[in-house]
Length: 318
Image (cartoon, rainbow, N blue to C red):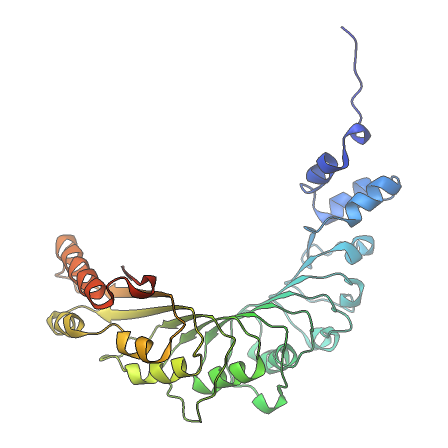
């Protein structure tokens, strides 16, 4: 037998690139950067590199090649070094960060998540930047806190934003989002309370997918409120709604006569071809599992009899 020396450099670029994906950014640059031109080129071509400000390593050499930045601690005047950020996750914001947070420093930003840990004081400034085309390549955005209400008149328009997920909103914020994002394709939000649209109905022609979580449990349901929201998006193709209900004899009788939004959908959403209704059932103590399954069966049977397979409709009871 002959002894064979295995050299990492003998591997093809594709295999080396796969191996490099197992390294954290700091480890990667400390171990392989500036070994030779080939390794530098392979490292610079990677698109998975993630950096968290908790690392606090000050390894500035790696900053221009980071694609995902997680800001979860105080960040000094460093954002300008991360010139290639595509994904930004915000868990911590300061006055200094707000000053750095702009399209000149982050021209390639495509995905932004803003979580609830951020102090409400900073939310109006962050939302104004998002909904005013500060980031011309921003396509995906999640905003955990849409309150307190922001100064809507400071919003201009974000033409690039296509996918938006937000938490608790009211009718005023809903209309403002539709006006500020003319090319929005997907929208998901929660209703904390009943909030009827008071202004004139606007028409957003590009929204195709809508998910609404009506997480309040007021009874009886008021579908006229929901109807105004759907009037704003006439070209909707996919619609999903989540509602909750406390089961008793009165609600069971009501749901047996309920049209499950068919009247509103058939009157206003002429392009719809997929509809899902998620129903969260709050059970009273005396309801055993067998009775619950029987109620689920009856509700689904009624739902299917109403829709007869239209819109690829489906009721999920849990």
